[in-house]
Image (cartoon, rainbow, N blue to C red; front, side):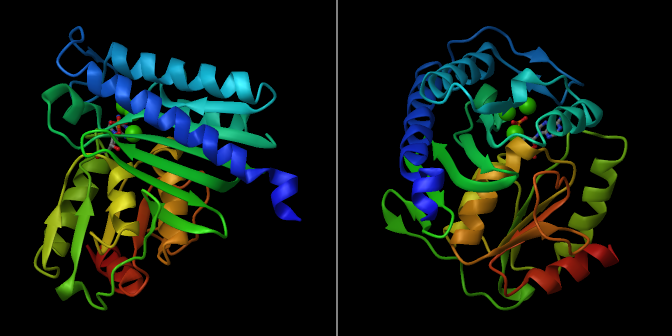
Length: 276
Ligand code: 2AM
Ligand code: CA
Ligand code: CA
Ligand code: CA
């Protein structure tokens, strides 16, 4: 059967092990790292801890699955062109690990406790395992395709809100100030009066996990990358929600302008964003 083909159990165990090891290490380094470097702009930071976390995860995956491909944020030059190329290069991989070693680096640098480790495994371009770990709260979110989504072993389901006016919705402010930020700000201006409230907490992967856990009704952002979304996309889908792009297309690894929700508000949210 499918399990013996993809061996998803041991894949999941390795993903969980990587996420908790990296998460513990990241937590132990809070406030004990050199000044962050700027990547693309003053809004785009990277620390030695991002790089160390990615190295730890990459090495651990490499010892278990030496034939698998690996795509991690810190192995890719900054900017959308380089990200697209990097994803293109691994597009025919059979097994591909997609890793964000710290999602929410700005929070991490400032000691704002909302950041995560995001690890996904895709089989021929489809995410089959997704793990997001929040070391600050010690919350581990795990999904396997076809088997549901769990937080510390407890099954998760998306929330029930059926309309924007009852909804708590999150977004993220893009680091790209040319194109993505102005668009996002127009979207925020349009959405704020229509929803119960908005949140901008700074980790796309954790926002996705919170949609899966029913703590947020929906989430959208402009200009994200595969490593921000791959693990979270499976969490949301396996918790009964919907993930796609803002044009109404379904989720794939190349989606940058994400729209995820409990499903009930997906269309209303998409239309409101499109009108902005
Ligand atoms: P990061 O912390 O891994 O960089 C916050 O809005 C989200 O945007 C986070 O998930 C953050 O991920 C991501 N982000 C930050 N800088 C970015 C950039 N220059 N390009 C794309 N995404 C970015
Ligand atoms: Ca980054
Ligand atoms: Ca990220
Ligand atoms: Ca990151």
